[in-house]
Length: 195
Image 1 (cartoon, rainbow, N blue to C red):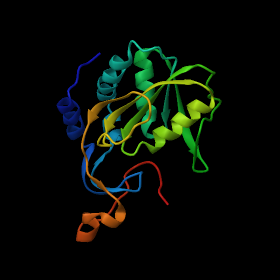
Image 2: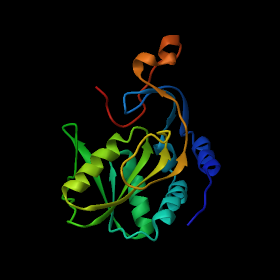
Image 3: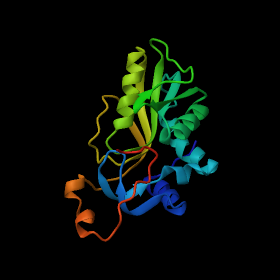
Image 4: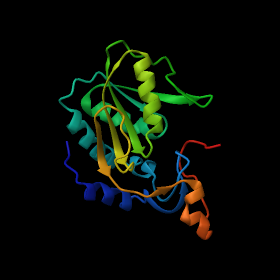
């Protein structure tokens, strides 16, 4: 398992074109001048294995049965962390705009679960996954992500570990200075449609 510093992870993001600059509509509905397109990193198995090994190393001595992640962003992260920990990997997905456990996946009462995500901003998707895990009376061991861009504002009530923590500015749409300047078009690069 690898030891990567924040600078090492950031270097991977930059070298793969995964750290985007511009005017972005985040899944949370907020606007930002930066966007982390983890899929551009996760397209490379060597980088995926290297970055996820930091998470696996952190949780190596935890008692974990299953790794669960929200689709789309967290699926590859969850799978690779589970592979390195030699644990089961499952994922949640949206059906009629509601996060759910499908495809015959289930959790047992008392099963010990690690929640994985690619990027955390407001933590909305992770909170939905946590509620699903709790509905099965399974036990959440912790939360992990590649990038935590919440500026330390998200508290899931469980230990959170991220390979990269960044203070990234985001704005409510009405307060967005990029919108007010009107020079850069707003784009939605993520996987979830916002209505």
